[in-house]
Length: 200
Ligand SMILES: Nc1ncnc2c1ncn2[C@@H]1O[C@H](COP(=O)(O)OP(=O)(O)OP(=O)(O)O)[C@@H](O)[C@H]1O
Ligand SMILES: O=C(O)c1ccc[n+]([C@@H]2O[C@H](COP(=O)([O-])O)[C@@H](O)[C@H]2O)c1
Image (tube, rainbow, N blue to C red; front, side):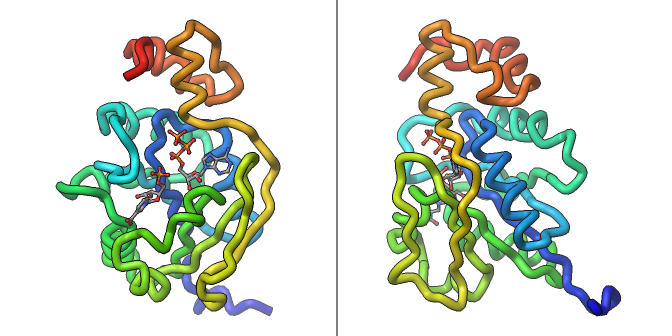
């Protein structure tokens, strides 16, 4: 029987550019939360994602993430990556979250495409002690964690949703609907703020 009094909080960290947030992100976070018995998943929009080209203003991406996660009591949104200047590195994200949640066991959630690049991330050798990494499946991307430390990295098959932020932006720019690809509130936010009408 689990000793509830001594159980450390188990906290997921879902980092992303969320330009815009879509149901692929939300299902991935929900599935990892279920599988790893997480108490909370913190969504962390990037400030300046150095591996992406131009991105939408960070406040819009943050607010769409707030709207998208509002209905789930276990989902929260953090501004740590928005409030730090300079390029966004996960090493800084995890150190900041650890400072805020010293008692928590952290699980960083990453899609198959992102985990494939993790060896290029800043200070990667130090990442493994800050969190456990959960790599989730994503249509169109092979899910592989070979070559990564077994003690820190695991993989999880999640329902396949072939949705990307790139495709959502492209659809809006062409006047096509994104209903059911992103939460209703995000559709309304995009419309109200005239986002993605022209592609850069
Ligand atoms: N459909 C999906 N299924 C599983 N994981 C996903 C999916 N979409 C994104 N992810 C993961 O969510 C995290 C954040 O992704 P991000 O915000 O860059 O979205 P994206 O759809 O990949 O964006 P873009 O098309 O602009 O590159 C990454 O780890 C990514 O691999
Ligand atoms: O730390 C790094 O060098 C690094 C390089 C690329 C991406 N990341 C993180 O990976 C997460 C997904 O990033 P992205 O660009 O796919 O939205 C997000 O939290 C980024 O900060 C981190």
